[in-house]
Length: 590
Image 1 (cartoon, rainbow, N blue to C red):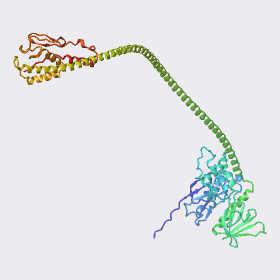
Image 2: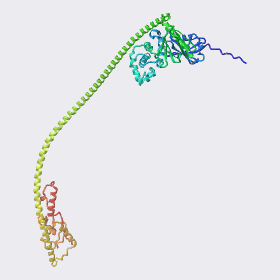
Image 3: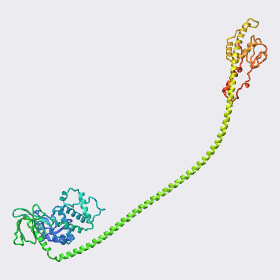
Image 4: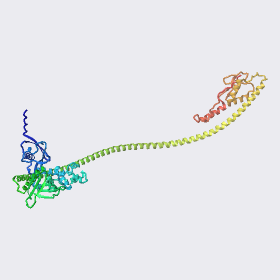
């Protein structure tokens, strides 16, 4: 059977240590003790007030334990849980934080632990105190309140109040933020360590501050709570952790011991009976360890400070003075910066004001230039209008002169027209008079025409009688007028001017005769050798028995000049035509 070699253990192992604001990792030697790890952590974070703190962990039995400094780390039930971190916490609370806490890091770690205990409701805090503590926590985290940099809702997302307080009042996160902001604004000028110290001063007055509670039973099996504090031991009823039922100061306690689950407290006064209670077996060592630590620290406070503590206090005092000087310097610089900032803002304001004034001046100048240009344009327009008006005035003057000349001409024309009118009236009167004369002449001619027609009729009758008588005489027989002669007679009847001629021939000739045009000839057997018409009929005596009819002269019968009224002229011509006829000839045709 082969031999199995045991694997050689590693010389170091990893350890994780967490604080409330940091996380540290170390490699420890296998034989390192709790003191080695604790000192390593304290050196790393610069913690010198080590008596208040310890390394807490959860053992294999799930009990909360504190790392023992005189034993090896691997021997304290942590070897099987290498990933389990240690927590650096305050194990023993100071009686007076303002007097006992020396280092700022100590104060800061205690502040974070107490704040977490209040928010997790391990320490009861009234609502009013919770708001005030929240304002100090905000001051420690954000510094002075700056209204310009503050954003609404900035505090609403922060964990500042216990949930019990929030549930107790029907208030919105914004309302809580306003309450906290009022207190926060009052802390202006307070540094971080000062704000944390003020926080701890208020927190140490709370009933549950610095108390480690353990569930116990008395001899009567009554369930109680044992509270281990910096001043002694307190006994609480199960339903009341605020007000202790019994208190045992460290100065009255002589001896504390336990045997399995039984815990015995002996007092200095022999007349006082021992106090016996029973606790879980796993908690006895923890209770005893806390009692020893708090009692030793209690006795230590009442003794003169050691050289180390005196040096720490001197250094802390110097450090505080130095920080105070730095804070004062920073405050002065801040004031100077604020003054410079205010001056800069004032200068920027003045600069903006000057820029605004320059802009307004430029605008005014631009408007003035625009106004000047507009006025110049208006001036040019006015000059153009003036020249136009002058031109219009000249045109009007010329028009007035023309109108005056026109008026003069109109007056002359008026006089001329009046003269023409009078002449026209006179001519009209003459024309009317002449027209009346012509009308009378026309009536006379009409009467003569009627008489001529009557004479024509009589001549026809005489001619017929004459023809009927001569049909049996010595003259050659005259045949009856043919159809052509009848047509000619009809045409002659239509012509008024022929009536006088026929009447004259009937009266002059009683035998056969022939009347033809001036250029025609008839046999001499039908007419006498000579035949003439009276001068009023426009006739002449022609040779060879030829009678000629000439056109009467019309010059003596013209009523008006050639440029007179055409109607009157036409009337005159009609009268002349009716009276004399126009160049005609009569011819008998067999």
